[in-house]
Length: 84
Image (tube, rainbow, N blue to C red; front, side, top):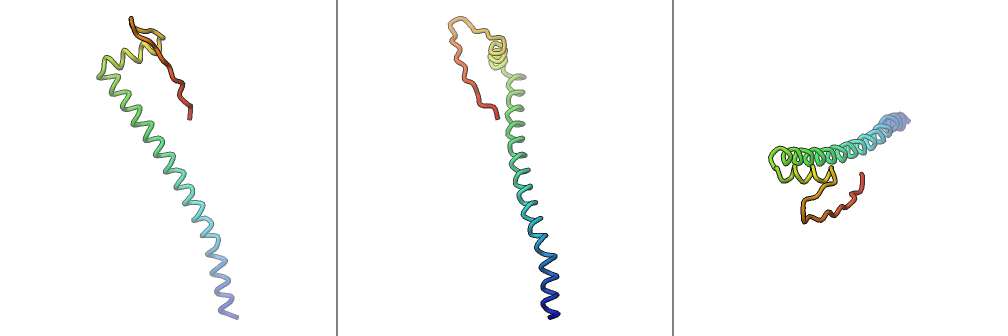
């Protein structure tokens, strides 16, 4: 009888911990996914900044795109990107 009480007490303390452990693992996975996405966006923005600082051709392309201008003999083709 004493053994059953001890086992019951241990089970009552252990079961909620396994539930919390699963919740925490799911949260960790979610945060890691978000961090990976943020790192990708950061790398993309750093690349754009570097190109804007160092490449006159890229700067010209971006400026003409934003102002809806084109050079002589140039044809503009635009693709709409899906928003995340």
